Length: 147
Image 1 (cartoon, rainbow, N blue to C red):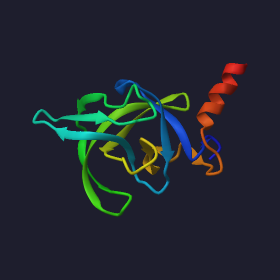
Image 2: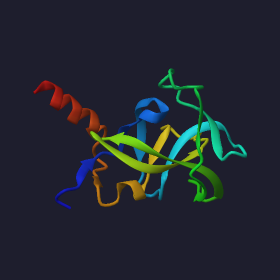
Image 3: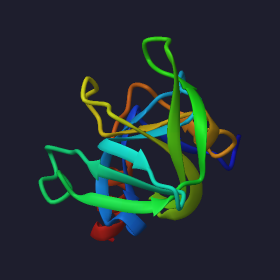
């Protein structure tokens, strides 16, 4: 536990391959996996997943169309307990100054407040969540910039 980083209940994450930077993410220890808010999701015969990013806070991302290789179709239990089959992608994300390869399922999270959800599998053995804190990523960055 000594080498685990403390994070808050909300943080920012960047996904350079999708040109998404400082995306608000909810840290959800109740969720098994990661999810990204998007729409118009479909998988073509070449196993490429097509989707439209949705993020009204970051207008540069909102409505941006993406095409990336499908990693796999995953069975995921949604927040309302319903089982869904979702396409997932395997990509690198930047989080707390490090790059991590992770799997992200693609789903419409329009009823959710944050465009990205980070789940237990990503957090395990790397991070401890302090639910009384948020955006520690920004505080760490600001502290480094002041030095």
